[in-house]
Image (cartoon, rainbow, N blue to C red; front, side, top):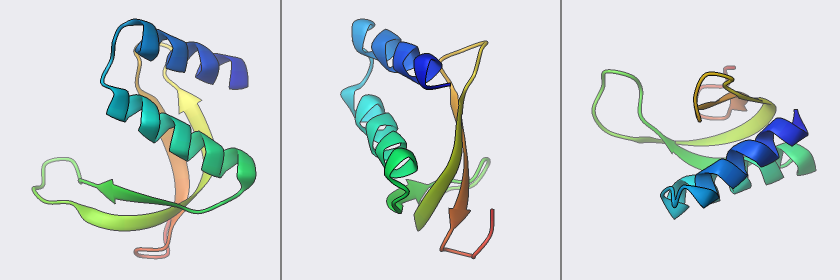
Length: 81
C-alpha cells in the first residue's frame, strides 16, 4: 500500500497537480504513519459549507482507477468512523 501511495503522490507532483492536494496527502499520510490526529475541513457530498474535523486515519487506500484516495478515519467531530 505504501508503494501505491508514493506512486500516487509522485503522479500528482509530476502532473503539476495543485500543490495543496499534495500537502493534504502528506499531512494525512504522516498522521496515519505517526498515529497522530490531523485537522481537516470536510464538505459533505451535495452540501455547502465546510466543517472542521480532527481525524485519526486508520486506512489510506489509493484508487486503482483514478488519482482519488480514500481515507477511513475516526472523527472527533461526531465520534464516528
